[in-house]
Image (cartoon, rainbow, N blue to C red; front, side):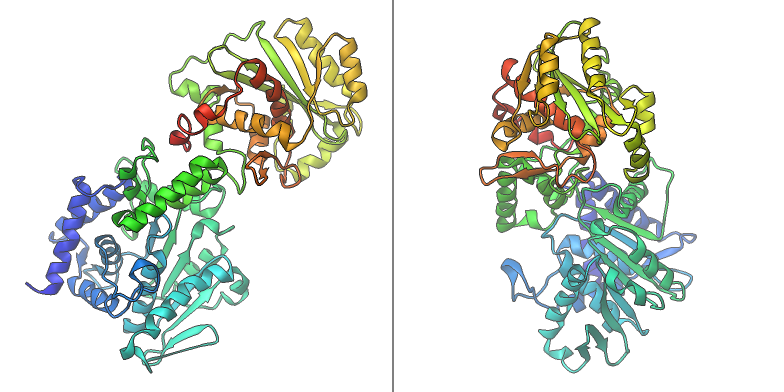
Length: 578
């Protein structure tokens, strides 16, 4: 049997092993393999427009064997494509159009966890296109910044410099590799080079770590430059990210639909492979790690690396976001140093609970309520929040905020948040003038007490600039408790509120202002791993969640919930990403 035929048999066998469950893989990975097997079967049909070029697969395989590993435990050893890598490059390069012989796939989306040889694979793809292609190719490695763009470029240089037979076949100068015989070039491209991006005519563009791209501008420039190419290819390769407003998440949603057999979306020119944990998977089950790590999870050193990363994330919850995105390849809606994953917070809302069939009605009448206040500056948002123990280990939380009319006019323009809707929904009171009149806050709390809505046990407040307010509230019969704003006081309640959400033990009524504040909040941490909200680095308002944490200082103590560690390591972390 020819070696080329052995390669396609190996590729088909891998796809069958994944599809049949003999190789552990996520649903989207399995679907990619099922798609390939279906296409192989249909390629024999007369009316099917594509065929699989086995000889192209053999050429790429021979090309990859020229090079050696440049990093890791295999450094210096010849590169032998793993079954996963062979499956990826085989799909991208070997499906051709029967009518023209040109490539079927014009786009490819590859999402893998880190350390799964992404740079190595991209380097092989780029050099193959530049050195083997019969036309004069332009290959661009596109990162958001210069440093990211240079990672794959340096990998290409390291690979080709170590191959004796390529000496004298290329030049590398001025940040560009040129293949002398064909005139093809390989060049990194970043946002700093966008002004010179127009006018380029890419035959292959690699968009590296797309999840960090703030906009789609680099991608758009490359796509528009490919119009004149007969055989163009753009490859997006990335890990998951934590900002779902960026273009990568939009692309992820689209390509996920391509792999969804129940979706109406079809795209025969787009190859997709996504390796991630499935929603029901336990992150601590090592058998699941292969779903996101088709290479790392196949050898002992790789598994040891993942164990170490998981232990650090379990010990320090602030590290869990990076473990989930980088090592388990999961999208997590949480910013850098963000207070908590927003998908978990939203899961605690009454609306989401209702979708899961949980009882949306909660008996709150005459229950004890611990109130927190964040008076902030009089010209800004001032918030009152409450936390109500439900007696079964769960807590109901609420907030109400106040903003001066003159400030609201300016905030409408700068904050990109619908304050007016919050006013209509009764979550926000606009006070007349340029500063918040604290009498509105006093009246709000008095009304709660007079209406017997809840039994306000204590009002917890930051004593800074609040002496008169506290004295007036005490004269009205409220128990006022000073809450010092240092990390020593706030670390445990800050963790407490977050961990209630992550363990689904907090309930909120989908207050958009409170949810916005939670999403805005970032934390800072000291050397003892104590945390508190960082108001200086939170770019938008966090006053409602700051007020809630003030309330939690007393609620967690008086409700008998002082030990947050009992569920910080087991109950919630296994389901952290929801």
